Amino acid sequence: MAGTIPREVLDAARVLARENAEIEPNIVSIYLCPADDRVLLVEVDPSSIPNDGGVRPIYFRASPTDGLPFPSGVAMVTPEEFGVIPLPQDWGSWEDLVQIWKRDSA
Amino acid sequence: MSAQARNWKDAFLRQAFSDFQVFRRFSEDGALDQCHLAHYLQMYTEKLAKSGLTDGSFQPPADHYSLVRFLRHAKQDREMRNRWRGTTREFMSMIDGLVEYASTVERLAPSGAVQAPNPEYPWADMSVSPEGRSAGTAHVPCEHHFEVLGPRYAPRLRKLLAFSTWYFELHGFHPTGELRTP
Picture 1: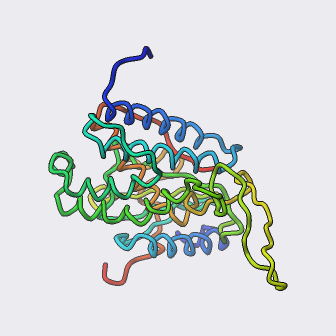
Picture 2: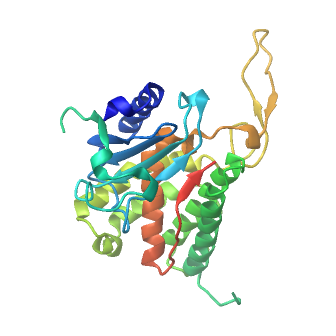
């Protein structure tokens, strides 16, 4: 599945995933929702506050000076929510997600 | 809404929620300069914190450093812990995970002679030139990139917003909609 994601998007997603995992040490794994022109991440964090009804991302503009040339959306879920609660409509399905980062101890 | 007699706790929470709604409204406007979102993030969290730090009988102190104090207080608050949907340990862990970011948000507020990035007033770059003089270049909030609102800090921002939403809902305020940062 990762093969269908543009290389530039995948590279930017991996950079953002590493930064997010560094900022939040409770994150255990991070998944990328395939898209051609934006970076959409689902981050699994057992200490995250559960979503209300469905996955609720925060969206960001592209920020080339920060090394992120694409708009992005970052969502956080608990392990119990992963694969269960609805993703945003334009994010596809849970089966489409590609794991791009995992904490060594996870 | 008509004016109602309120104690200080309720008054600060009501205004915090109003600021939070502006923050959310601004977050949907991709054309808006980021400083305004940063400004309302700092303002709503400060008022929410002040509400949490008074029992209603006294006016909270007029400083900008309430949020971290409030989070530390929250850890000791038995009622909040009991109403949290997870375990006490998870509640403590969630609060601990917010303190550092909360401190960064607190520092968005301008203070004294403004010489640091803030969302309200131009500030001077006090870096020293090779000749030993202060450069004194003026910077403008509306042209500044506030990293605290960037995707790098998304996990912490999301946690702070989720905690705020939970706290507001606990007190009968219900925000809606999704969040975008300019």
